[in-house]
Figure 1: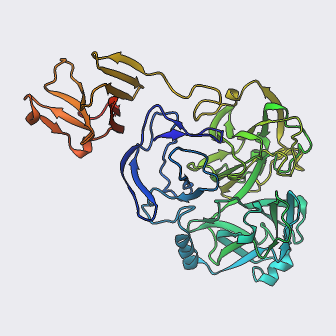
Figure 2: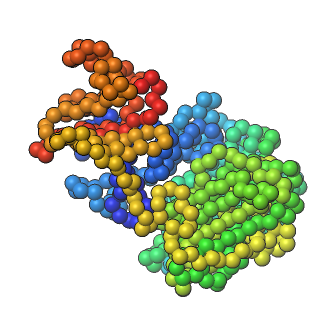
Figure 3: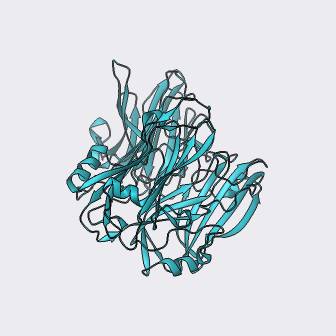
Length: 542
């Protein structure tokens, strides 16, 4: 059943238009349900997410979820759930895309790397605290001892990375940030973000010729790993034996150097400011002076964009503004802090020009006790961006030390209803979840219900008898020389051509390439027979 879920932990809502068609299924002897279904990549149903081409290297793979239960009715799955990322479209050039299978990633790294180093914890005791931020510092001398540098002129080229999360700590690690410092001793006033981990973002591959440079005259010499640790149940005696990051190195200089920046309120300049009771909008703008000053070239290309809020977040939007107009927008309509703290957007690369403005908007729904802060029970609003070529554009925040890159906090706006937060997928909570079908009687025992859009029509044909059903279209109003959709319990629902002869000899099933119906079903019981299908209005030769 084609269904959707909004921001409630409730039974999925059945879509009015059924775009998925079940091809086949089997229940194996060992209890596995295996099924095959199909759907158009892009539909005009507002309850469907588009399935995009994820073959380009910098387009995030599709994030898939699964849930199951043993009851005959659909109920809450509890812990019976899984999630993963899968590249659905193959790359024509054989390149590995972000999130492709781990074996492919390792194969690429082993073929190209000159070595690797690990920056990680060593027997770290998980604090018995609900929220804790731990900063593990690696000085320039530590990097010399690790073999990354021999002196300040050495350069290292990072061609990929993977975060190593120890099994005993996975339930406690909420996210990890890696920062670089241009000096030797981890000066907190000169840090710049480099890489970020949240569950699901385990590793990243940079194409040949691209990567992140460490060392030399104009890059990082010391590093800090920032661990956000959640111990909600206050477990005791938990020790981490090595969570951190593995950096894959190459001795080949880079053609394109990649940088990272953080915008919105990354340093929580609004700390202790109340988010506001009820539904509130908070807007942060990184001014044009920041990109004007910090971009070393006329433009940069954004390759990855990750958004971040906390528990009472409802929606987050990040925009690029040029000349007063929005030229790029990314968003998460239904925020779920527990699912992924800093999810990356699935989008094509886009460009930011010198003088552009970043606008980050966060919507929250909470009580009067919630404030901006660093704890998991506090709130945040920020975005992380990977881009090339690298420039000095790294931070733009509220009360930031560089006046040209100080975020302009536009304040908060209290909203009356959740429908005002601007979600693009499905109606807001409380709104209707289905359109109205038009119903007509075709006789004393047959009824027809239909719902049409600009591109397709969904039909439900019902009879009180146990019979096959047919639906035909012909401008002349006759059965002969028409296209028809016929269904029965034995043949299912298919498209047919009715030629100039009455009887079975004049009925021909259309070729497979013209079988373009979606959401087909035919049911029959003691109450009668029902045929359902969705058909494109402009369907080739039909």
